[in-house]
Image (cartoon, rainbow, N blue to C red; front, side, top):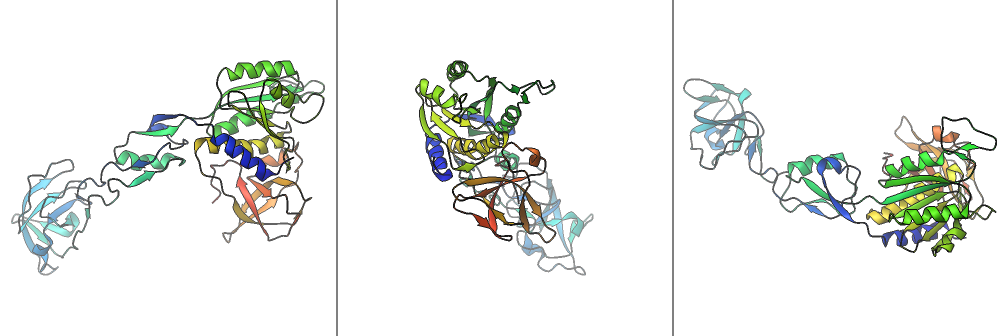
Length: 413
């Protein structure tokens, strides 16, 4: 049996060796994907000096003596709208040009006076104040300079990135392809049809819909989800079919311990898989297995108890997906524990917790009742996992503990 840290190190190294291909996606499809290479600004933004207001482009020194009681009048010599070309226009001293928001600023002008601050008459335009140098002018390159680093390889992309990329004329981004994953539930007692009645000795298969939903949230393509009975021959047959589809990862729940019907480890060995570890010092989820199949596909064998499966998906499978995709390691949030907690030394605990935002702005977390690996009722209240390392036995009220969101890309603060 190995420690949780040792298991994570093995997972990360094995998954990092699984190189995922990339694809180009239009901006509308990049949210939730991983950037595959650095992206740089191709142009300046703003691309040219332009007006931030509807008003008049002026040479500031022409208005150096203007005041409320002593306005300066400039001749109006034309107008510029957004989209107009001004390459052949130069503002002469003693004149002004009417300009609209977003329109390019003509050569010679160094300030914009809003239309609300002037008076237009037959002789020209009266100005009643002296503008600041560069007033209401958006300068070329003020937002982005050509060559600025926009996105980094391994960066998680979301909708917020689309606006600046589109502003810069970037239509597509190269992203990491989603890992292709298959999920297997094992057990003759499982009933997949949640609308049917249970027979004697049967239970509903809760792991399958939960795993498929969570895997989708983790950014993978779950191309197959099957339930197989406790028959080694069936297991090996299903593996053969799945391997023909070249998955990046196969995950199963159940049949991974040492009981009479726990066939996963022996079945994997029968097809030539390399067992990277079997059994980890964690709770829930001690009978946990990682293997590398002959074609390089990673295989996670998770315990069948629902919470043990959830922990394995959240902290082991997610780590592998992160490593494959080139993402940085996840960091815990340190939060004050609301009550005392004690455990035995030697097991890393993953506890169902509830993060609370107090009125004074502090964050605290409570460990919920119902920590057994078969108990899923706390999922109706929990919003975090509380992670307690194996060497810690007693935590006092007010001590800090590590917490993780239920879903890695969910923001706690």
